[in-house]
Structures are given as structure tokens and as C-alpha cells.
Length: 185
Image (cartoon, rainbow, N blue to C red):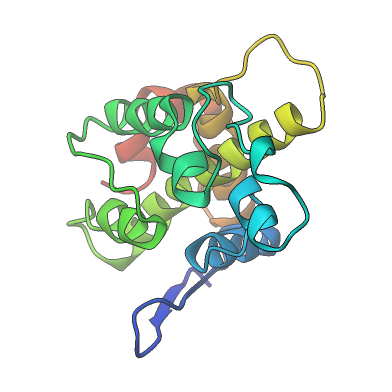
């Protein structure tokens, strides 16, 4: 069953998303991002685990690492979101609040709930890909490129859709070439 559920608490700060189209660990990541409960350096400083002088962005832009910066404001993360929007032929500014960014992204859907659920998978894939790339930088897992590539996001979302959506028989190449058509536009 495809189903996306977003529940917002009374103060609109608490948001939880669960989708049968994505792995539960990715839903947990999104939930933690929305609550600012990710172990970014600014959060570790607040908890007394790191000292303030250890706050640079792991992607090398010299800004303080925070949830908003890591996932939306850092030039490398911003590039990843911009590439996804370009791939989908959407034009928009990128919101730096995680939940508002998600609502904005899901709002691109004008085709109903099924399409909204499927396009949300792309948002989760971008979030997950940025997080994985960030962790590789933090833990010194060497890779030539630091930026989360559009191909990583496309492949991740295609794998999730392929494994969870009955009748989704598009090849990766078809999905990359015609994303909206493949997800039901």
C-alpha cells in the first residue's frame, strides 16, 4: 500500500513522515532532521561533546555545520537539490527549513496522492544521499567527489520505487530520461 502520512504537532515543530515506499531508516532520518535531532557539529557543541572550534562544515565550505546548513544551505547540498529540481523541470527557490522544504517539494504534485507519494520518494532520496555523503566525509571514507551526485539520487529513488511499487517496470535509463512520466505525471 502506498501511503504518505505527515502529522504536524500543535506547535508545528514536530513532524513525522512514514512512507511504505522508502526504507524505515530514511523515515527516521527525516523525522530526526525535522526535529533538529541529528548529530551535526552545532548540536554536539550544545551537548558539550565538541568544543566550538570544531564546527566547520564537513564539505569544506567553512560554515558552521547545522541541520539547515548540512542539508540545504551548504553549496554542495544546494547543488544536489538544484540538480533534482532541474531533472524534474521544476523551478523554485530552496527552502532551508527541512519540513518546509519537504512541504514545498511535495507541493509540486498536481496529479493526486499517488504522484505526491512517488515524488516525495525523490525528496527522501536526496536527503538520504546528502546524509550518506556527509558521513563519508566525516568518517574519512575516501571518494573522489564530495558532492552528492544527481545519479546517486536518481538511482536510489529508482531502486526504492522499483522494489515497492507494483507495476513499476521502468528501467533506470527510462526513469532518468522521463522521471515524471515514470512516476505517474
